Image (cartoon, rainbow, N blue to C red; front, side):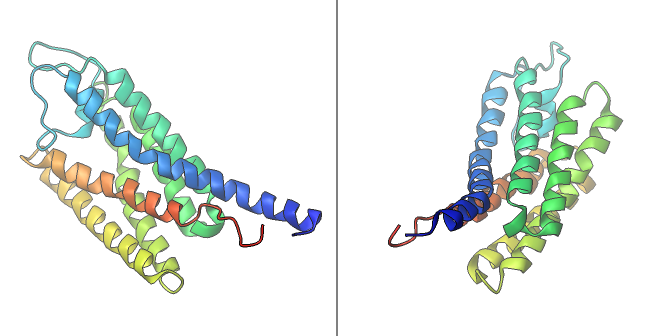
Length: 210
């Protein structure tokens, strides 16, 4: 049984990591909010052709309306805060570079929710762009950091970073193409799963004999 002082040090070290891991495990719930908001749209919304940002548009017309835009924009902000906060809590296992890139990504998501696409398209684009750059880089950096210790997880994160980065480039270059929505989600959704997978390996485990 560990001495009280050692147990206190262990708790001080493990609780931020455990909380950060929990935060990252919760974040894939973001995907559900897209479906909830998308189901309420009128005028036709395509998860393949339409961007995620259209779900956060405030204005309504006979051609298209997203009545739950407040939920979508709150989701951008809330899950962005969770990303930045979780990265800070997990800064030790993440390392400084991945932590910094994920904090930038979280703040970018927060800013995106504050600048709906139909209110100021230029500001919205400026707010969202860092997310598409920083997240794939963070996965590659984290994967490289883990390769010697956890080669399977490290390789998977590097591959996920490469795929999401390529999808982000294709989304930006393709503009409002027929597959814009699919490419944007390919750039975003796998990051949620990849970070959740990393977080799962960082949950505190009881040691034998405790």
